[in-house]
Length: 200
Image (cartoon, rainbow, N blue to C red; front, side):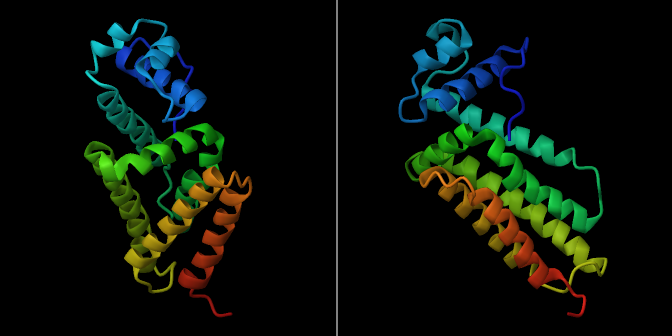
C-alpha cells in the first residue's frame, strides 16, 4: 500500500501525508484531529492549514496519496506473463496489505464515511474501477494467449474484488489474523477452477 511512512522528505505535502499516515495508524479515523496530525508533522496546525483548509480536504488528498502509492507498486510489476502478473496483483491486494494492518483499519473507517462524503466516495470508486480494470486486462490477455480458459473477465475480476474486500473487512472488524491468507488461498482456488483449461 504505502512505503515506509518514516522516510524523510523535503516535500511538505508528502511530509504531511506521512504524518497523516502515522496519526491515522495511531488514533484511527474517529479520533483523528488536525492537532494530532500536526504533532506527527512536528509543526503547528497552521502549517497544515496553509496547505489544506479542512481535515476532509487533507484526508481526500491522503486517499490520493495512498492509492497513488498502490498504483506505483503495481506499475513496478514488470512481468507481462499473464499468470505471473495476476499472481503478483493478488499478492499486492492481499499479502502486502497485511504489512499495513493499522492503515487497513483507517481505510475501512474512511470507506464507511463514503456514503456521506462525496470526495471519499469518488476516490474509492475510482480506485475500485482501476483495480478491476487491471484484473480484467490481465485475464483477457491470458485468455487471448490461450494461457487461461475462456471466461467472463469482468465477472472474474468482480469476484476477486469481492474476495479482497471481504477479507479486508474480516481482518479489521473481526481481528481475524488469517483472513488475508485465507482469501489469498481462496482466490487461487477460484482461479484454478475458473481459468485453468488443462484437463483434470
